[in-house]
Length: 463
Image: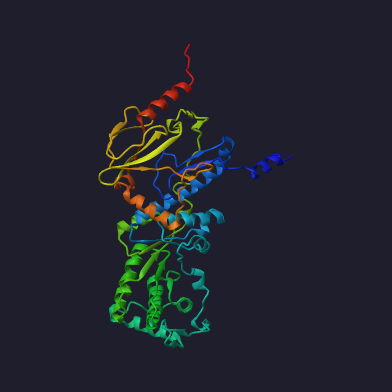
């Protein structure tokens, strides 16, 4: 016996959202608990059907973007952040969404080719350990020719050129003769990769031994590419002591500059290997020479917080405000249709978010307004904002003639996210004991909340 009548699915196919209006805080905005992310108006049956898709779309997107922004904050502005989470994400849909929202939250590129194609996200990646270990010797490279970058000449035997450079590295005075024989199958893999991608040669150097084999093999190939006008992209470290190995690799790169290759010492060093906020913070405290971080599992699975608890509550029906009560005050809803504003201080930082009833006048810059905690009577303060920003904008006006806000591009959303984070006071976003950001209601809304609360709560009787 079917769980639902077929007519119900017919009804769903014909649902008309023409009478629905959707207001939302712009994507990429910093938001805080209790402030509505969206306000949805319309026939109650239709709006209830929209609850699950809206909450589903908002929860994961907000969670992943926040997680990405936290990683950006701990890594710092100067580091390149690469999203490497495709293989560990919750299915293909989760992987595509994660790539999009990690970029929005401050990551620079993704290894997810489909996400790059769909959303225009820059693509970055390297070869695998399996690629390196699949080679046995240099004899497996059939075509050894490589044309110079400017097209003026062809090196018929790029393998021999690499071997010449490897010999020079092994006897170089600046390197102190620290390099002996290297793994030749790894060298074959590097040469093959460079022949295929001479302008994007980024080598994974830890398949066998980073300092004894990976680094000298990489340098030999990179110097041979330099002879033909190309510039290698760098290396990736995927295991071991990342701080120590990055510092030692940087020393070698700087020493290689003696071969009249300016800028070799600034070769990009990328680190991966199950990185998260804590490991990046630890690397920063130790000191390291890593330029880019490739982060996967802990980023896309939001390992430190598996889900975000956004909810969808009825606050008004037929122009009558409604409230949801609970013994847990944090779960008491704030009734009635509201407008939300962010009030900024003299230094440009946001001071407080305030919710007001729709019928109330908007707060204005330079005018004092009383901001009250929604539930704690003693927490209140007068605020004289220097700038006022209304948060909720109309993105779906339905049948109304209200102006419709434009949906920005992904790049613009990402820029807004970065700008919003820069506007916050440092103590609000520090990792240890951050200062809670204040979310308030107007004096009129405060009085109304508590009046409605008393009216709706049953009165107990003691005997």
